[in-house]
Image (cartoon, rainbow, N blue to C red):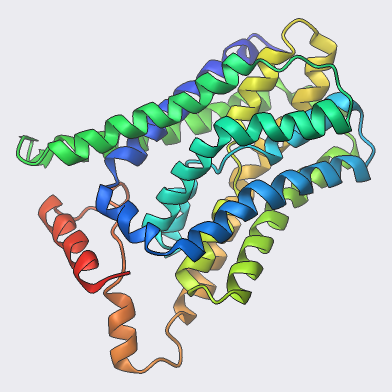
Length: 341
């Protein structure tokens, strides 16, 4: 590995902080209220994220009979909370952005208890691994999403008058966080490619097959289950993305620091997160294009004009990606609350 590998965990942690800040600034308390008025959708997404994905990761690791260190990396990805970028992907896919933000926040909060639980069940008990997980890094990684999200929410709530260059401060936080988030995510993936290029060559077919199918399996499960349980097309796309997209930055940082004393074990434990991260943007781009240009145009097919107009009125704006004036964004939120979820 190159020297770049030594700073990758810190790049990943910086990415988590920046994106968390952007999520908070792009969200209002009313957005959470709208989403919690849909407990069925939130519950389906939560169970898909924290029951189906961890179990699936362990089944895949067991089916291919990979060595213990590699299995640890697979399980860590499987029990990680939803990726923060899923909120932006949900917007691009014409999904329910308020629901996406709520699910990302809830999965991150739940990760404080459920990540250690699944690691104990699968890594310690099932795999009988004696690896010492760097719990401090895990907790810090999660806090670096929760704290800045709360800060962003506070900025959005209390910044109602002060503007800079015609834009509210929270708007600038959104814009800068979005830009820096993309930069840090790109740097993480590029750094992983440069640092772990040997891994890509040495990773066997079992690792690559698992890395290729994990995200599509998760997204497909979330989509099919939510569809069968009667969720709307927007909610179905959102739950699909939230289920399949895992926050590999957390797994990367935890593995890097947990195996710091054993370079050989670290090498194998990092193989899957590195391969998964390499394919992450590829699969996400395909899913966004498929959802946006194939499924989304069919949302209101067969509805009469009044139903279509009502459904269109329930859209939630996503300020990071839109160029609307702030006052228009606030009016859209008020309209959403008045019409109901």
